[in-house]
Length: 321
Image (cartoon, rainbow, N blue to C red; front, top):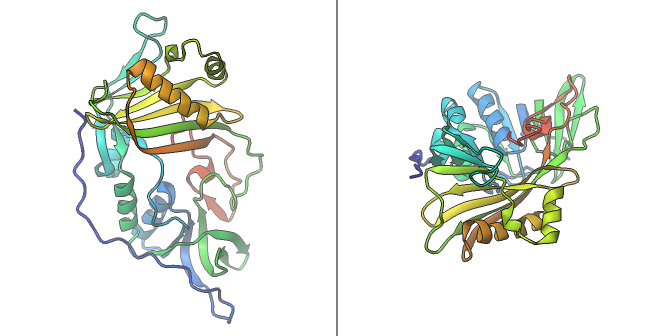
């Protein structure tokens, strides 16, 4: 069966403050060693590491108190050495990649390597806890200005300002504050995912993740869907959570221009019915994503430091970050 990890003991949430009013009366802006723009996994991890080294840190993000929206999966042997394996809530002993039904020309593959689902709330809470002592601002950066003989100045969306000796842009794919010398024209990994409750249970083993199911027999004689699948082939990603709870995600590995998540939703529902025999279910939550794949590295040197997706730290083939 899938193995839940034991959660860490609860700790008080970190203080979240609104940005102060703009310094229009001559008051100096608050200065920090490091200002991190963006509180996704890479931004908070960077802020936490800076705090561990005794640096003064400010994190600014307009969605600081919201749960990260997407499901994340990780190889356990990669997160355990970092000490974050207690932020995984379900683990599968092995992962399966299915290309064709048994007897087809392409052999299927089973990886005996444990894989886990990230507990988004636990990981964010853990990283915020490790940012203890940092200033957390529920605000969006609108401008970053650098000077040769002074700290960098960050303007927030309410007009207030803060200063940083180093500014880290971890805002994702917008690339607003980090300079690149090449045009950003990526392909996109497009997904539609849904966490379902299936009355009577689903047909999947609880100790096995389906990393990719590329079979397309479910399409049948649907000519429009067949043509769409030839243009943008998709696979199903399956995370069995419990006997009657399961996460499915229909995915275009890479497409240019990006595929349509509404098309993927239709494929997911048909695959559930035709391939897995699931006709009745309750959608507990759903998600849509379009992840830019790859891209050139930022210009080096520059005053704003790119981090995570902003710095093109996305695998150009798999989308892993």
